[in-house]
Length: 130
Image (cartoon, rainbow, N blue to C red; front, top):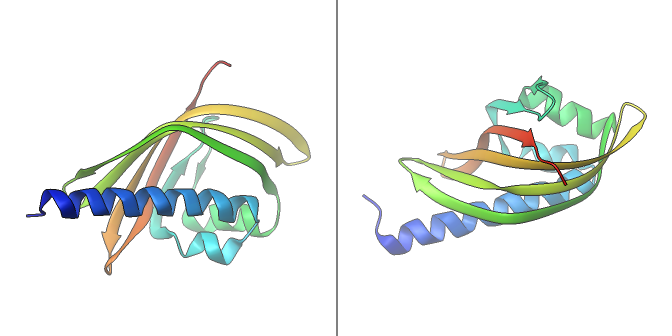
């Protein structure tokens, strides 16, 4: 069982990793993104489209999807068993398949510790107005 200090440290680490994920997305860094996500990733976009680790990393590495700006709001993390659940809101400027998009979503990400390092295992987002 984790102590309160260990729980707080894990939550802070995952918040930093989630911020790092946003930075590698804007940097169009496929290998950097791949290092942060689990092989079994399920990534569900607000549009309903679903990506695996391979398809998500490929969309960034090939610049099919270009994250131009990512601003997170109201981000929280909480330990749930062996996972950390991250919730928040995100405003993104994205260039996808030749179209510029301004997105505002609420999201939930699940980070699971495997091999001693938390990795993004699942993500789902839904569109917000504004």
